[in-house]
Amino acid sequence: MGFVDTHVHLHFPEYDTDRQTVIERSRKAGIETFVNVGTDVASSRVSLDLAQQYEFIWATAGIHPHDVKDSNAEAFQEIEKLLKHPKMVAIGEVGLDFFRHHSPREKQKEVLRQFIRLHRKIKKPLVLHCREAYEDLRILLNEEMTPPFQGVMHCFSSDCETMKKFVDLGFYISFAGPLTYKKNDVLRDACRACPKDRLLFETDAPFLPPQSVRGKRNESGYLLETAQVACELHKMTLEELGNITTANAGKLFGLC
Image (cartoon, rainbow, N blue to C red; front, side):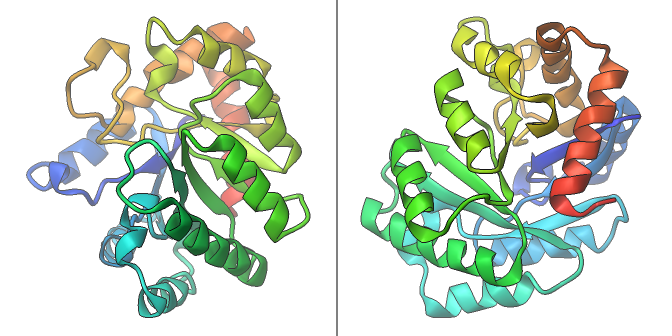
């Protein structure tokens, strides 16, 4: 059993010169399925185009919090339209980012509320981006609907206590390359404490490569380095972890 890269951006220009090679190399490394994530209307369209070319690639559609400053009703309607396609498995990535300040906080919250209402309407899971905003996000989620939610905390970056709060809301917790970083013991503690039936892995490629290739372009095959760290934390084999997390991804995204 291989792994699912539950969050990757294979359609990004970083792969324009060797996309097919990267996909083939990642498959040989043990990545059987890819969830390719859109970040705005144009990106979500291209993500869907890519997913339609491969039976093992699935797509999502959303507006990243960095980009919501430019969003409007027409953009939201287009995202909703894209999500009707059977290769579209989730709403995202959407969320709150109070670290970079690319979009006003209130605009981020306004747009996220729209996506949560869409989640309630179409019953597709949420792929949530959160940076420096976990408590604001938790409060907003509870204001918009009664748990449980269906979705994933993409590239989780906080502590055990925060992880447990989002598990209690119904979310899966996805860990990426930063799990391998030498000074990230707090994140490793969160991974160790994460219930196995809520555990997912991703690369967020081309971003956030694991420790051995920091500074280079990330790709899905490098997920195995992150997974190996998780194996040590959960005291299980790579095959066992692959079986568990592939089943989790299948359940969340409707891939099985």
